[in-house]
Structure formats: C-alpha cells, structure tokens
Picture 1 (tube, helix red, strand yellow):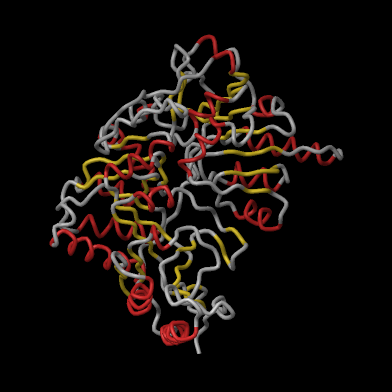
Picture 2: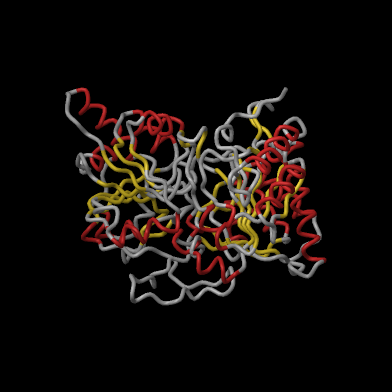
Length: 496
C-alpha cells in the first residue's frame, strides 16, 4: 500500500502492522477510540487487539480494556472487542448487538452520558486517566498535523489527553475532506471559560486539522476500508405520516409568526423517520434551510444537493452506501456547505440555545404526561444510550420526540401511563408525534397534557385503556397534580 497520505517524513518511521500496534496496548488500559455513528472509527487495530485478547484468554491470562468513543462505532470495533470479552467498561453510546447483550448480562459496565459532557468530564478528571488514543485520519500533513476523516467526535480530546497515540491513516477516505472540518481549541476549564463564538450554523471558529504531539505517536497503521455505511429502508406509511404531521406543524408555526419561513437550524436523529422528514422538507415550502446537528445522513445530504438547504453543521456523517458514493463524487461542492466539528461543540448547550435549534429525536415510549424514555426496555435493559438527544431537547427552541404509536407488531403501546425509565422529563418535551397525530404540549398543565397526548398520539386500540387509567387516576390518586395509580401504572397495555 502506498504511504502517500503519510506526508510527514518523521512519522513514516512509525508505520507498522495493526498486530504490532495492538501489542502496544496493555491490559487494563483506558483507550479512546475515534468514531461516531459508524463513521471515522479505526478499522484494523481494534480487530488486531481483539485477536490478541482472545489469545491471552486462551492462555488463561486476564485482558480487558475500557473503551471510550464519540458514539457508536461498528462490528470491527465494538463487536469484535465485545465478542472477545475484551471490554470491561464502555462509554458513552453504543449500538452493537453483542455489546448490548453483554451490558445487559452484566459483564460490561456501561456509562451512558450526554454526548456534550464526555470531553469535559475527561478534562475534569471525572472518568480517570486516558492511556491510549486510537484515531482514524485521512492523512498526515508534512508538519505532522492530522487530517480528520468522516467524523470528529471526541478525537481532539483523546489526542490532547492520551499518553500514547496510535493513528490509522485510511487511504480509502477522500483527500478532498481537507477543509471540511472545524476543530476548536478554545475551550477552557472553569473558572476560565469563554463564550463559544458561534452565532450562525456555518461559523468557523477553529482549525481544519488536529494538532498532535509527535512524541506521543507510538504507531501508524495504514488502512484502506470504507466506513460501516448505514442501510435505510424507504420511508414507509408510518414514517411518512409522522413526517407529514411535523411538516404541517412547521407550516402552522410559520403562519403564526413563531418560526421564520426558513425555519430555524434543524437537528435530527438518525433513522427512517428522520429521513422521511428531510424528504418532506425537500418538497416543502421552506427555503434556505440550515442544520446544526450531530449526524448528517442521507436526507440532509439530499437537501444540500438540491439547494433546499444552504449548509449543515455536524460532528459526523452517517450515510448509506449509495449516499457515500454521491458524497465522494460531489465533495468539492459539499465541502463549502458542510462543517464537521468536535461533538463538544456540535452538542454544546450554549450554542444550541443561542441558535434556537429545532430538535427532532426518536424515542422508545412516552407517558401520558410527556416524560420520554429513549434508552431502556422494561426499565432495566439498555438499548443504545441517550446520545445527544438530551443536549438538544433541553436547550432547543422546539423539542420534538417521535415514534410509531405501537411496537412489537402492534401488541405494545408506545404511549403508556408511566414510562419505565425517564431520559427526558416532561419539562424538556414540547411536542410528541406518532403516525396518529401531533400533541403540542406547550403551555399545558400535566392533566391537560394527558388529554392531548392520549387523544392525538395513542393508537385507537389502546386509547380506551389509557382514558380509563387517566380517569380513575384523576379520581382515586392521592395527589391530583400528576395523578397516578402506582400499583398498576406499569402494566403493559395490550390490545383486547
């Protein structure tokens, strides 16, 4: 493989195999891995490290590490290390099925954090010492600066604080990525913090490359592999219905003078519903859209390509295989319209509130008072994690949560009397949307919220049971502000 993307003469001497680089990671290390939502993660060293861990376990030797990332990664990282039983602690967000199973079985400890908190918690020393950083880049400049790849996440912090650094230089990445990133080096610890100088979604406040002390670099591994591209199904009837309710609501807010014609900067979670909303916006009446979000996926890329959206700020790409091909083909056009930032800036509460972001995120379930569970099944089993939804929901101009009204082929209601786990309290939830309709909760008391949520978002099969519960709770509960019958609040609602 050509080493042309390692342009630093001094660092070329540190090129080695993935197995040799993995041998430099000691048992018990805290390892900061690059990667965010399946993009920009190291692709060779984690696999080699998993093989090394399996060999150690075969000899009866203990070998596990702590894995810190930006968000979810891919089977070559989370999946391989979890399968090898090589992770003792994982943070802050994951979506790998093997990792999830081990977390819920109790063999991996998991810390679920707001994504904006991770970097600062490490700087504060709350999470312990970072021993090694394993970071994917798309190239190394002659002076040793690192060109980021398709995500930034927490890479800046890992490079700053790790004792030792392993760099994967991925030649599959388009070298034209140079210039798309904005790596901010102005954050400080309290009491020396200063305002984040972003007043518009496209503002650039940092550098296009990472700084890295060359003396900390212990290995460089050359790779040539694509990201784990996400496959999105075409929007179905339910996704389109949810999107339709949201777009109708936007039009109403514009008419009422509460939103400008080009709306406000959009944040959107990942998934088919989010892509359906973006597809609707592409056909809608709102010009010159912008985004200030975590992840740029297919629907938002299409808005940029069509000219409906002027620019998008994120920390990572999360594209289908087809969209990734389009991205590379049109990167010269897109580079001036996309800004990739560290997640501590893409998710920064100060900036989100200043810009007036419209936050749209998925959920597992909501209760009749507007509390949202976005992370747990049956109260104790984690799905993925809170991610950045809390960063945006609490600080957004509009906080929207959306889900189909039922799950498990219609046997479970996603609107319930009381959620079994609370990630977003009623105080942070303004709008709930299912395919049945939209519940605008702004300015409503708890009992008023319950009536609107049941009437507008619950599936008709479950609405009578929810109405019955609410009426009896209003009559029989000790407290009448947020009436509950605790002895039956968690019974699963099933169709008659």
